Amino acid sequence: MKIFVTRKIPQAGLDLLREKHEIEVFPHDRIPTKQEIINGLRGKDGLLCLLTDPIDKEVIYSEPKLKTIASYAVGYNNIDVKAATERGVSVSNTPDVLTDTTAEMAWALLFSVARRIVEGDTFTREGKFKGWAPMLMLGQDVSNKTLGIIGAGRIGAAFALKSKGFNMNVLYADEKQNEILERELGAKKVSFDELIKKSDYISIHVPLTPSTKHLIGEKELQAMKKNTILINTSRGPVINEKSLIKALKEKWIFGAGLDVYENEPKIEKELLKLDNAVLQPHSASATTETRTKMAIMAAENMIAGLNGKIPPNCVNIEVFNKKL
Image (cartoon, rainbow, N blue to C red; front, side):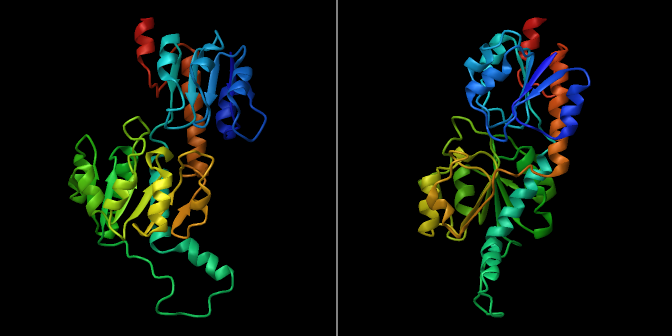
């Protein structure tokens, strides 16, 4: 069968697909337009796409042969799953494999902001370091502080568990109780508002849905402590970026560490100028090991879908219930 891959992924995944199928990879190292995806999908049975690709109803209905869509990502809010289900097209993602890697990035951002690592690196490289000084680059301790987790699912829980060595008071806001965090860390489930007000460090780990868009805005930022550090490795639109810029400029909070942005890849120009924001290029899962595992998982999902089987990580299993 024929597969269209919207961007080059690690070779292990491509090799797995090539064993029994014909693949075409989008030749440019950039995000394809919707029309380019439609063009590439012509005559194809499978679509392997990225989170950055707009896979809407028009794309899904553009190719009658399309059987399955494999997303090279955990999130799939870029895919019209409802339309895919209506068409009888299975959709899959790559969960779990990037859990620890993303949690590690959240910690890297937290430490970078708290200890002003990026500022210090720039300061030193510019030749401004003239010797130890008692007031130079004062940051914040991480140990013994209150850590707030918004969304205690796979990644949020992994992030929280990694705080164990820092003797932190852990709060979490989630619809469900997380008994593991409560047992291992003595974590406490609290309301969203209480978490916002009491946490020194807040890390966001929720999917992007209508209810989580702009979950953090001006009201929430003003309710935070002056020493709060806000970390986001989930989805950019969860934070109102303009409100965050205002909060950082006016020192409502200490700082922010971001791996995702509201209008990605576009970033507000004012945000780029702020010293109390550490910015990463949506690279939380960017380790050789994890990206390779993601490629293999996406390929395995694709192969199952093409063979009429339920992909191991199918997100619309009702497609197969209909067929039965």
